[in-house]
Structure formats: C-alpha cells, structure tokens
Image 1 (tube, rainbow, N blue to C red):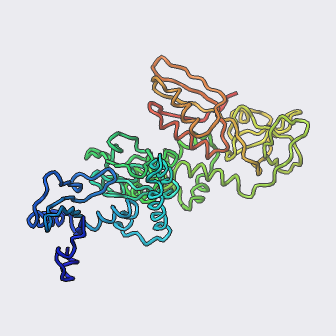
Image 2: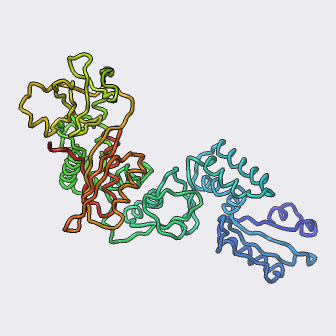
Length: 469
C-alpha cells in the first residue's frame, strides 16, 4: 500500500488486484496493520486466518484476511514480516541461512532454485511428494535444518545430535541437558537429526554437568567441534588434581581393557605433545585425549617405518599372511598365538618353536612369561599387511537382565564385526558373564567396539581376555 501511496495512486486505479500483500518489519506490526485494514474496510466473516500464531506444517507464517474493498469488491490481504516472506518464497533452508548471517553461496542458491523448479514440474505427477523427499538428502547432504519449539531454525552438520542442537542454543542448555524430544517423542541423545524435525531439549537444574561419555567419539553423542570444545572446557574448569587422578585411572583402564602392557608412558605422552606424564593424565581426564585416540597412537607406533611383508612358507597355504617381520631373519614361517590373539597395534614378541616356525605372542602373554627357555624369544614387529581380521577374545560383566545377550550381538553386528563364538553364564549373584570371540582389523577397531559394549545398559566392565595357559 505504501508503494502505491508514494506513486500518488488510490484504489480506484488498482481494482484489477485480487490480493494484496503487506510486508512489515516486526511481528507486532503485522497485527497493527491488520487493525488498520479492518478499520478501513469491513472484514468478511469466516475469512480470517492467523498463521503467525498457528504456523502451517511447512512453518509458513502470515495473517490472511478478506475484506470488502473499494467498490465492495472482495480483496484478500496477506500481512507478514520480511523474514516470513523469505521463508514463504524461498523455503526453510534459504530463509535460515539469511537469518543467521551466512555468507552468500551461489551453489546453495542454485540448489534452492532447482528444487523450486522440480516442485513446479512435479505438481501434477502422482507421488510428487515422495519424489521431492527423495531429493532432500542429495541437495542438502552436508547440513540439516531443524526447529526449536518456538519455530526458530538451526543449521547443523549432517549427523548432528540433540546435544549438538542444545549447545548451539546455549552452552548452559547443553551442560544441563538430560534428554530430548523430536517431533514430540523421546529420543536418545545420540539420535541423528533430520531436516524439518522439531527438537525440544529437556534440562534440569539438578544436572551435575556433561557426561564424559559425550566426548567418546565411538559413542556418537556429539558431532560438532563447537559442542565438543564446550564440553572439554567444562571439564577443564574442574579441579586439576581430580582430573589428573581421573585421567590416570582412565588410561590404566583403557590399556588394561585392550590387554596392552609394557607401554612407556613418557613416550606415549610425548606422542601427544605433552612433556610430562601428569599433563598427559590431565588431558585424558579433561577429555582432550580420547580412548580412541590412545588406541590409534598405539597403531601409529606400529605402522611407522614398517618393513615389507615377508612371504610365508608355501608348505602352509592354509595360514593367512601374518605380516610379521622377524628381526635379523629372512623368510621364516610365522603364526599368531591362539592363547593371546595379537592384533596390529599390540606390542609383540616371537617364540621359536620346534618345527613350526615362530609363534607371535603379545608382550606380557602369560604363556611366554612362564616359559623357561628365554633364549628362544626373538624380536618381531608388524609388517605392512593388507587389511584382514584377527580373532580377539573379550569378556563382558553385567547385571543380568532380559535381552542382554541380544543387545551385545546387536552392537557387534552394527559395527560390522564378525562374532565367531559366544557364551553366556548367569551367576548366583544375579550377574552375567558373557565371553565372545570377535574379529577385528586392529587395536583401534577393538577400542571402539569395547566402548560401545560398555555403554550397553547394565554392563559394568568389558575387557580383552588373555588365556592363562
């Protein structure tokens, strides 16, 4: 209306209009404009819709009213803010990027234009909605757009969780988060959000703060670096001595769980760029160094300057290439010990057998430590091998419940790990012991699956087993 007033025109000159759109700056201006409209012209009963108070499912917002305009001709008027107009014209994604001050992205805008064109093409085609839905992943594969309960839009990277959303809203909301609802239903905190979902964060003032599990990348609680850093900063503000003690316990637990022994902690700390072991403990306790990172460093140590693989004896074709280098020896048959099941990343030692080449054990294996013929031990190291799986025995201790074994099998299967044997025993104190043999490609993969198994309800410890034979 302002446009026509500036041009010196009145409504007698724009009778051809069937509808009029009014754009204002703020939400309260929408209702002020509505009052002016209804004061000027008589509203038609039953022809008023408030989509600002009650947005459509597409998050469209506007005031719609139809009045008897000049000449008693019906005139539909839409009143909305500029932001509401941007959402109506260009969709959720473009509106939000503009609102958050994102830099102009020509490729992104081309995708928006393409999507709008596709919608036009598919309007009269059966299954058009399914067609458009199938395109969302391809077009917006790098980000998701979700809503707060108040309709605010938040952009997050693909794979983001409710915790990422909570920390995007406010640091304190993330710290006090105890649960989440998506589209009105409760979801776990590692739930991966999808575009268009409405996310509600459940908080409590009684919260003791973030869980250290949130920093475990294997468990998938947070995706964004922003959320991860805020969680780390929270732990850093805790007592230094407490974090050092916790870090020492966590490191000991991780090395014990992986069955790793004989590690020089000063060397391990220097691998993470810490000059002192206490500083390394502090980093572990604060969450700056994760369990998976420790396992990965153990693998890196083995992979550094690996020698080429030595061929195995053709007389034993049934044995897979072990990829073991026996120091100072040429072509020699090697095999992995069944008592301790070494995997790449483990510290290993060779034992010269009579007529069966060299058996490879983990350093600290009870079978080797108990052997009296120490002169038959030889230095060995992992060579470069194609990726293959190695058997590992694990032990799970838990409070017994229905479905425990099923949940264990599900976690292993979801990680695409083969389980070759499993047994479960219910103890008299209502605890359960599950032993299993799984096949992993290395110690880092083992660390990941052990973390996930330990996160199962009622499970209180998961360790790598070593035969005492």
